Image (tube, rainbow, N blue to C red):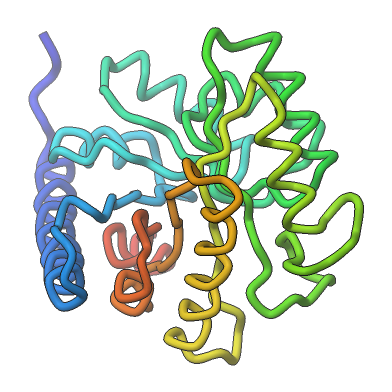
Length: 248
């Protein structure tokens, strides 16, 4: 039998419940405005920098998709949540170093941030050794084509970071499944402009890989624009969990 919840736990649960209701309403209204059913958009609660206790509270409120962006935080948190018996799926949404591939494949259900042939190869090798089913991955694409930031490069002949090369590498690996694209709106771009460009890139990917229909785009501040341009997954942190500095 679990211990009774403390007053602080009850307060935190109430905070999360209210924020979750507001976020779900935003998603529902955005989907309706774009002529899509509410269940066409999946909410990923990004719990980075927040404790496993928050992840467990969200799971108790019906959230099944949780996101993290640093393996050194995600791995122990995923283990703690699993030990508590919560039924969740983990999304790795941050930049990933190849030397972290083995750790990530052991808990992640979907990796959003594959942006190079070398990273795809590292994940494929780790997944083949440590998983009994293919790992779903998204290609992170650079919307503005800036090679200095993360993301595969559309239209590039680069053997490691060209979007077409990365997608083909993933699709050709038995241990991986190419699921779609992910992107972050570049700083200084209007969200509508950024996600319109992303929708074009997603359509091009689906032309070559018809099964790659997922589109991870939109965060707390721009999820409505992302949904209007076809996002199937939105990655929401602060709108659900609050700004970290206010919770200390």
